[in-house]
Length: 397
Image (cartoon, rainbow, N blue to C red; front, side, top):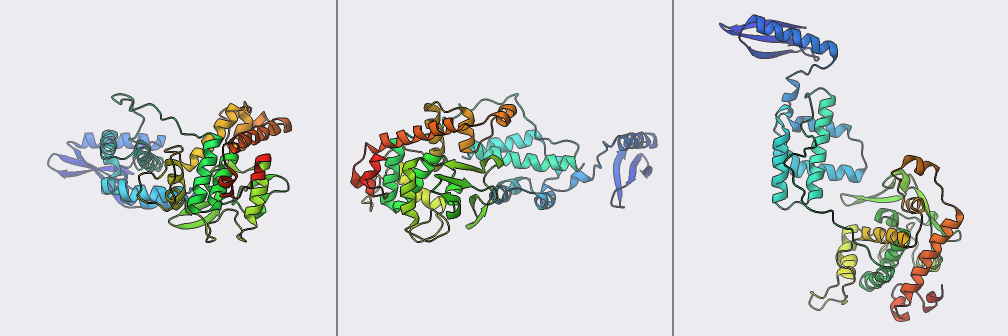
């Protein structure tokens, strides 16, 4: 319900009843006729279901974020990332701004400024993504007429080519594992080898439990409900892996069975990979103490406890997963077999649904991984291999 109301000698406003029972007001009409014309527009839009209460968009982003975050339903790790970016970046700039006052061009300028201050493209993209989601939901709730953040091509230069992801050869992965073992213990070296020869993610490897490790059957299981270890704000919890497709059974190359069996006899923890102190490895600590010096070397350090040589500078733990896929491609493994092993879904839905991996293809895949292990072993001495609990007899696997 809406009506015209005189405010002054040459001023009229439109009054209307809001959904919450209070009165709204749209001022600025010079005549009653102009006000009534706007009322007709309101009624027409209300019948179509397209009318937006102009007062709704006056709430600030900070006010809307409280409602938005309450309804957010994502993984704990994703929520933690969102909260960090919202609190540290989005709110300081946009928290006091009314939803209706946020414009696409002002957001683009903010993004450009963030990039200029040294934030990476991926970080700024995530900031914009979160802000866009908040405004998209505000649009769905009829708080604003449209989401001001839309893809813009005009005037947007291409910054750079997409950087090629780093990967390592089997010999390099084994060398990294040996150096990591020397730095932090045999468990770290075997963890790296297992990641390299299974393609499992960090959370899947560190979340692997004894009851999902079937050495007699030669496989490990990534459980759909608790197949990954999540670290959020310093706390660990088991939960689902990254995607539904990530729940899978991974066949182990034969050479891994004996080292894993020996490793499991060194502790009684329910999880396969724990630190020497029997605790879950923290990703940041592992990167700093094992992965970085084992891949980049520490030649720049003065008198380190263990001297390490550069092997593949810049390689991350996730780069072991890219390495695994590269080995499979090099071995001519069909794409569907790669996807099933890595927990990916194919872009082609039909192919994804109707393609299957035969026993012969799976065996050829395992044979290829086993061959790469044998070739890598040939580059090392029994003394080096002993650092990760591999006896010289391993060379005969």
